[in-house]
Length: 157
Image (cartoon, rainbow, N blue to C red):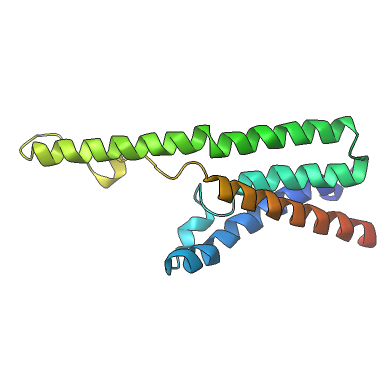
């Protein structure tokens, strides 16, 4: 099978790219600023990881059947990925935020310290997702998966 005819793979990649692209206008709606770096960053609405795995599971379910072993694998990987995005990775980001605040307060308390904390030294705080962002990514993944599946059936990809 030609890799360019692999609809589950194409759907997953399309879900990632479009979810990352959606972060720019959704960010503008949320905070009123256009930030193009959202398209390549982690975190934010919608979760591109969730969109990717759910679109994969959707296409596999539609193509191979909802009771297939392939769908079961994709569904379990989706659940683990989404749990990780909203759990472990989100908490790692919260820890990074706390560590950054502590580092800044140390500098504030000891202004003559030889240790200078630069912007580049700060830990990345936006690593994971709030549950609503994971849910948004999952919904987007279903939409992309269904669109890609139906496009493949009518065009015989």
